[in-house]
Image (tube, rainbow, N blue to C red; front, side):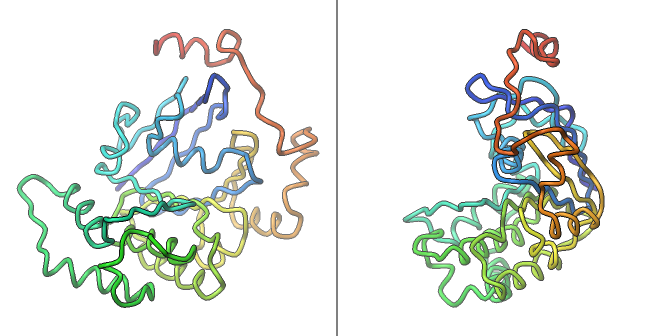
Length: 275
């Protein structure tokens, strides 16, 4: 069973601390939802787990199946079983959807394994049909000329073919109409298994109506401030996030996290040890 462990993670960008000691464990078979206002670090956390080079890990660790993945590159993390459905999928002219996914699937196979193209074509076509991607998808260039909804459904198609251990879905609901959201939700729900850990990043309840989470986290100013069940979703839906301001003693969610110097930061000793 897969296990992702984020331990006391402190992260900076351009010398500023943006994640303040986050800890999160995702086991295979679990579905976690991370909610919160804009600018609180939700998408940043997903990018950091995937190895975005823009961010510097000052302290803490990220473990996949007990092994630190911090030294690994993005492609190495992907081959280990991590997946990110991006908030804004990029267009790649000249590379077809089929070639892109075929290459990604082949890269994850053992050296003595070979992709059976005929069988894979049927898998690709079945996945495209399930997501109503239309005929000719395999020959279209990756995301080029796609609508926002098509791009999001294409991310889910890739996920279904790659069979990741841990998948982050970053605001996969944005750009989807009600019918497309239901379709995506149904397809992701069908993928749920003890071998897959899911992390849903979203602002709204509507995605969670179709992909039911087991655990809900609220993230504010670079930290997870509340963890619970569906009762948190109901409270957010009825009251928004303003109720947290009084509980946390803050005036505005948009304010940047406290900027520590590395000399005074609580993690400074760990930073020194890493360096």
